[in-house]
Amino acid sequence: MSCDFLALAQPGVQKLSPYVPGKPVEELARELNLDPQSIVKLASNENPLGPSPKALDAIRAQLDELTRYPDGNGFALKQKLAQRYGVGIEQVTLGNGSNDILELVARAYLAPGLNAVFSEHAFAVYPIATQAMGAEARAVAAKQWGHDLNAMQAAIDANTRVVFIANPNNPTGTWFSAAALEQFLAAVPEHVLVVLDEAYIEYADDGELPDGLAFLSSHSNLLVSRTFSKAYGLAALRVGYAICSAQIADVLNRVRQPFNVNSLAQAAACAALDDHEYLARSRASNAAGMQQLEAGFKELGLEWIPSKGNFIAVDFGRDAAPINQVLLRDGVIVRPVAVYGMPTFLRVSIGTGAENERFLEVLRKALGR
Ligand SMILES: *Cc1c(COP(=O)(O)O)cnc(C)c1O
Image 1 (spheres, rainbow, N blue to C red):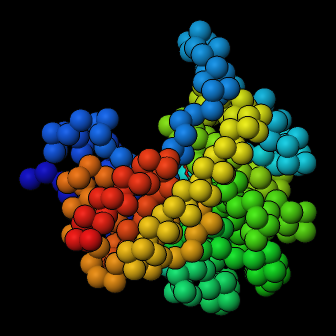
Image 2 (cartoon, protein in one colour):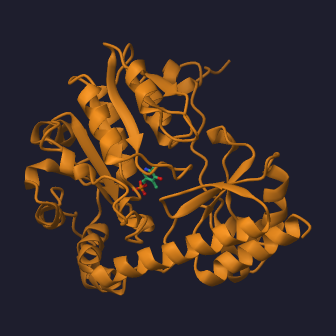
Image 3 (cartoon, rainbow, N blue to C red):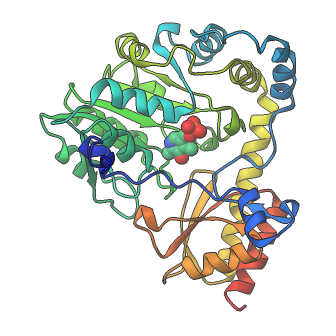
């Protein structure tokens, strides 16, 4: 009889379910025999504008160097980030996506007997990274779909090593203010590492969201993680970063894969950081698309959660799975969020004007309007 290798996995891993990504265009095209060109994917919070032309040029210039390992220290990109944000280069850690940063934190600070605190309806990677280390994933009930920071603070105990908070949060799009963050940071015990996930912060340019970096100098237990996957439009390349104290950065560097960010990603990220025009276009397109979808939902009598991200969660007031099936049949991919405890919602990433219109059209039909 062969061994049960599921039973042999560490207990935390046995209890995990794999992360479910947005359905790839090619997969739906195969399943329904559709032309991939005709499919609209608004499921993974990707930037609908295509990559920055400057990033593409930087990648091309790097191609002849593919035989070489990337710079394992990521010097050029770290230096650029340090200068941009006014921090020391020793405070910057690069990740294979900011997902990698979350895992580095878990690997360095979590173990059986310890726990990580995060909110209900928060990013699925927090419990995965936590349980993969055999630590307890402590999900705290949300308040009006957003983080209940007071309840999260109350859930912290002597065995808590990490708190994951996202501002804005995915998949809800909810956010908290600078005052709320300040109060939370003041109340969290110093031994708890606060991971402030700002994957969508570049979209929030109206001053309603705090800049997490502004709190670093007063809170040595704070780590801010950001990404090039969303507003910078480089999701396929997998590059993100953390800014935190030099000591925490040193710890993360000890558990990091030596070459975790590839050379094309490093070159493209450097170029994207300098492409201010692209970032401005991303923001403007997102703001217009957000208005377009909200207007469409209003017309259909649907409720939604106001969002500061590049996505919006819309509520159908009943199981959203059948509606999602109809959308898929018509070649529109959005994200069911039942696994996030939101079975009556679908999360829709903001697309181009034409993509948003196509989604609304198909949605009207799916609802029989
Ligand atoms: C998309 C996302 C990330 C990170 O994505 P990467 O591509 O790994 O950088 C992190 N946190 C949240 C909340 C996200 O939605």
